[in-house]
Image 1 (cartoon, rainbow, N blue to C red):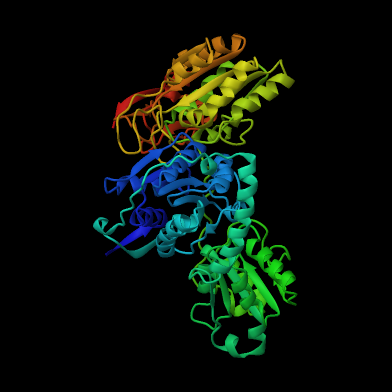
Image 2: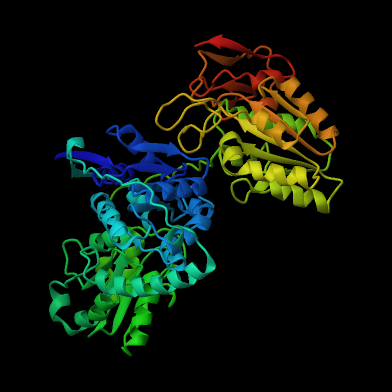
Length: 611
């Protein structure tokens, strides 16, 4: 054993390796991405690792490996669980053989997601047990227990870590690679009565799942990660203290402990596995209490569980939290917000964080998310915008860096729903408004993940739209992971690239052109020709991500030639372009030398210069 200062996601990955994981698959999405990256980076040489084309594919591939008896890990963010929902719902009815842990990273806030979504609620819906760690060290330990639990009960399990655990850091003791467990699998054993999901089998297995979860509720009341932390000081003796207590979970348990650090503490119920709910432990906790405050994010899962126990056992205990509006209904918690809730509940303002006696700091600058300087997507959006001037248009956006095309001055993202949806939304808009020129933007990674089916639907149903594939040859927003179009796997193997052009032509498109968007005149001409064609057309704007293909040259403004029109600033919104009095200037620390600005300058006042 040795100590390491680890990010939560790194600790989760090392915990999985220590548990003897054999197969790991996932799809990148903040805040989950580093788990699979760490498994790949620290692979002792006997673990298969893949970035799957989407979360559904990852879930199904891992299920197959688990059927063979292998221990499998699947990673995704909370919205990725929606994509993987179809196989997971049936998988719970079928069951597994090798331990299967589905790591989902929830994102309260949300900080980098479309939704605030609570995997604990999904666990109840899917009837799948869920583990909910409260710290980096506990995540490391709990995922090892999750593998054992999954294998013992022949069920997949969810492992729900939120952003503050995923991206928190802690110094913890971890084993040497030579100390990792070795898990051997026997292989897939044919048995149609077990592995083929017929309706009759589903009815039988559904009844078994309900019986199993009832049994698990009793067992989980004894599980070490579900516990009652005793009261201390005045809370353990004063009558008022005995009658009030706190129920919490995950990172919120850490916040509650931080609020009471160095002070008397009430009794605290910490729920480490919220489903199946540890009913007997909750019953022990509730007896003798008048009021309970539930501190949780995002859904009132513990609150509902305690209300159920109170009703079932006829306990006269007031349960307070989100449902009673004693806690915020949405948004991420932190120590200050939790402190405010606890201060109001215990009528003790001493629990509020002290106001620092430091000089008042100036307000932080507003920094909206923007496309990077030199991002080729800016050129792609600009080319389409210029080509379609004066036309009635619709621009379907998507999830990724290109969502930032919605910002001014580009304003090129009319809708953004979920991955791949822009293609189908453009079809719906076009059907209802046939006089509208419809465009759908999708990234290269998203094209493989969920865009192909939308294009097939468009061709089959004779839509009229232009597909714009923004191909920067990576999965940029989540940290430059490979995908089928890059010719590289998660394990570093070089493989044949899947050609987006060939896929589109195979689907039936006849107009498929590839152009570098930084060649502005050619890009604009391609868009105009495409828009004039009927049916489904495709343009692949291919240029490498500016973050991984930086030039040794930068743009420079000739101040004598610059007339101060600021067209470059007004129309592009590139963060490297800034006003300097009446003239434009370029921040050379940001500029990548893409020269898009030079192509729109009416006075040719911008030229390349060596660094």
